[in-house]
Image (tube, rainbow, N blue to C red; front, top):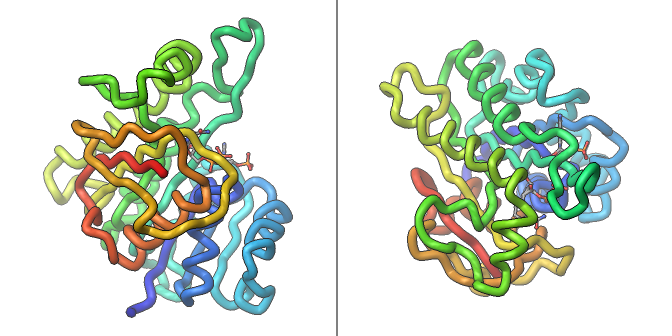
Length: 254
Ligand SMILES: NC(=O)c1ccc[n+]([C@@H]2O[C@H](COP(=O)([O-])OP(=O)(O)OC[C@H]3O[C@@H](n4cnc5c(N)ncnc54)[C@H](OP(=O)(O)O)[C@@H]3O)[C@@H](O)[C@H]2O)c1
């Protein structure tokens, strides 16, 4: 299989870390934007990636996704001169904040998902060159039509998570709006929006244990592990072994 160049955002979260580790194991050239380099190094080492492989295949950029220079550096393909990467995978998300109202949690940064996506798109436009495939982690429960989640989870998703979901909806809208632009004006070549169900810290299983469906007819599962999300992202967006390679919103569940 030909080696890809991949930029990762949110790699100190379990889902993207799992995907990054698989890409490194398989010899792809990766770059990451992280706020804490030590946290990233610990996560990839825990997943069996040697320091030699990190040195030869991973470019670590330290900074915030709100810093245009750091984002530009991450999007520039390692060993491809001025070109941008083949694939961008983002699992940027916010930490929940339960004050002032514990019954209406918000995020420490309530617009982080949309801000990150906007920054990635704006930076890609300013860099020019070949456009990457863009893959972003969203969530179930943000459907405009239909329930999209198991009935028992309705209170959690439609009441407790209202504010975080507003941000994710905005982010998805931004991706769709980008794809509606004329091809020359688009920041990205193609997209895949992945809506996982509630994330757990379970083990990585296998691709045939992950149920995949469209946003219109979702699979009503309860949870999926971050490790399985990472495996699915790797198999689908990097290796291209799954049929769900681009141009869609998909739900995945265990
Ligand atoms: N929790 C769930 O059940 C659930 C369900 C469906 C979807 N999701 C979404 O799935 C995605 C992945 O979730 P996860 O649990 O694997 O990871 P996560 O713990 O939510 O990780 C979020 C990532 O975003 C990074 N980040 C936040 N603000 C940033 C900034 N300003 N600049 C750079 N990086 C920033 C964090 O970096 P730091 O380590 O520096 O904070 C971290 O790497 C998230 O977007 C999450 O919202 C979650």
